[in-house]
Image (cartoon, rainbow, N blue to C red; front, side):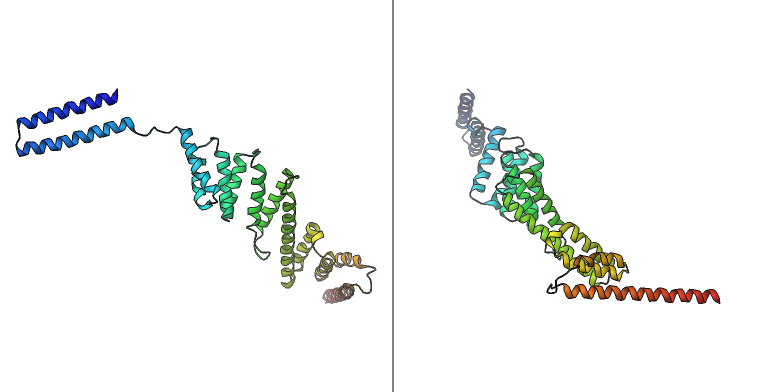
Length: 304
């Protein structure tokens, strides 16, 4: 009906303009007619276009269209092109049928591009929003551990990410002990713990070189406590004995040396143990002489 009305309106007005033109055929009149007729055509065209324009998409249809385009790029492994549309879909279509998968795919896009910091953020957000996800929960937990592991620095540098990765792998294995990724997670976990042990050893040796036996002893003892199966315990015991000899804590030093009692003659540590005992006795004798001198000085001071 609207179309027929607009068409009739157009014809009626066209007829009126033509009639005016016939009554006044001056050049100025023809110009005004031509201009008016042009505007009439434009206005009518605009009105008609409203009748035949595209139908406005519903929210659900719009989300479906966005999803189809973004997912197509992701499936073609165009991760650089897919991450932004997927992220926009998560924001503009919350609670849709595609939001969970889209949110996970944002993390996957960053992961495939080796953008570890961004991937960590996205996987963490996903697990926060979908903690019970049956479809992606397991892989998201594993990916989070992987991106933490991929940010680990060499032992000489800060090991915060190493600790984070250890926690992530531990949490994953607690949550999914029978996972297909469990063996890989365990292997990575062992490597990360070895790296932390190496870091602790580097610090302990650094304090030894700096002639800080108290600080070195703290790190050596922690190595035995936390990483006993990953380090040479006999080597560390000798180092602890040396630290306590320097601190004049002879009983503590001897408690580590007695662990070598009965050592075999061909044992590679035999000479080091013998040297440590000699050092212990020399330190004891030196301290005894010092105390004797101090005592004699005290007596002389009292007699004066």
